[in-house]
Length: 320
Image (cartoon, rainbow, N blue to C red; front, side, top):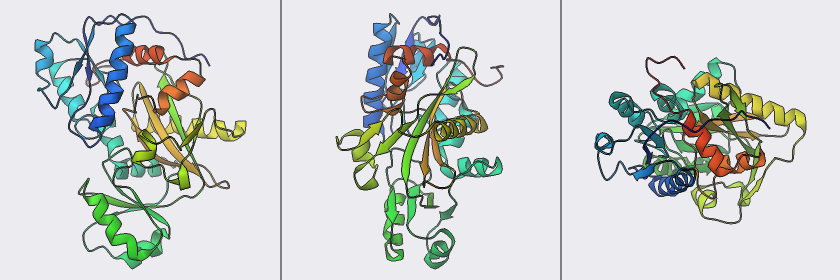
């Protein structure tokens, strides 16, 4: 797969933003450490910067002229850091303020996809005292209960019995005041990364199939367990591969993502694959899926990092 080459970026000093204050801090530290090492191997003058330990304004004192965003979750992937970087006029990797904030909000993302007629499971926002009978009647069982603005499957519960709905709601509320119930799609789980080439055209990387123990791709199985299997490229026919890749690019463009992202999908074996969410700052750990897909496309970890860095920019008021 030829995604176009990139010259070495002209940035003099690159801050790798890692850690942060979200529930995904531990994963972000691992992602950022990997990115930092890759940049330094490639001869980039890069250093780690943890926004939980010092204010972003200190980037100016550190003479940073670019930020590689390796933060995950709130205060990193949700547009807040991106907005501050815009104010500081420091170019940064990945999507801008609007796309980052939209993609972080699963409900808004799904509404946009629905409006664009992209396939995504039906859902409903829940509030305290919700009518469990009505929710079950609309979405059926099993269903997924999840925080609206959280990643890494934190706070996620599969609910098979109506009597378990209240407990699942409380579990999700520990991570976010906004909780959603989503129609559960049983079947095969896929993820597909999208990476813009040197001309800014988004192209899909090879599709990965995720086979988690008992179908539970939770936080532990994502990052720390060894039982989850990742099949890359996914063992599916060319037509389904193309459909998943096309949907992922459509999801990317509809949200107006920049640089790179990763879409998660489910397929029941009969109907169209269904988009679940899109991540605008995906993991870059040794368990992460974007580096795995890139490797299958002949792109090394170091080259992937450099391609993402090469597209760093300010997004507000700038023609892409």
